[in-house]
Image (cartoon, rainbow, N blue to C red; front, top):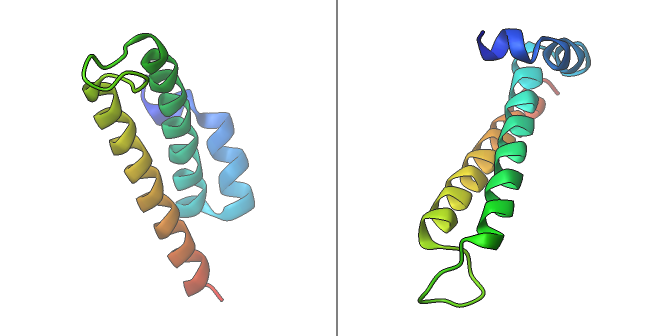
Length: 85
């Protein structure tokens, strides 16, 4: 089962509110937010030996990648919104 099938209800809701491109980007942001939350929870238990109080370096890198992807998607959504006005 692909993401389009798994997230059908969410896609339909967001696509109705925002249109197809922005709706799909909104669902992608939700998926990334869920992943970021799970990685963040994992980071609580996997601490860095070099930087006490910080997640392990691989967890930090994954969190940065997800955060960066969310920022890129948000910027595309904003550009789409601007182009329609």
